[in-house]
Length: 135
Image (cartoon, rainbow, N blue to C red):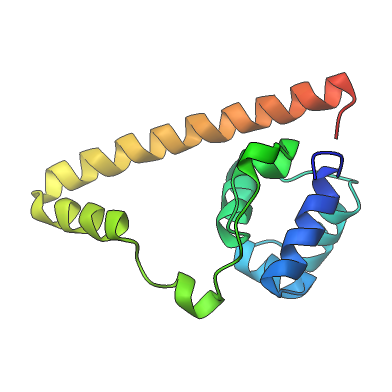
């Protein structure tokens, strides 16, 4: 699967999940034409869109970008089943709710900063990959 381009991986996974381009675009928060541009390798998802796309496609951002075999996604979970929280997510929510409001805000700020750093890292990885000519 590593010989597929970014667009081919997005297309393949979208079909495995059972979305059309319009449904995927809506779920990610972009237009269906943006999804089409990704799938045709005209553009690539970056930053926040990459993270949202990986969540919707139930795979890692590194698999989307690089197709690393060790990061290959597992069988997709039906959309209705993926709406349930995992035990870790449930615990995180319970812990968050146990904090005073000021500490909740501090934790949110920290998580936002960490997420932004990962978005920047993935964008830099994508740019580096483009410079080397690999898809």
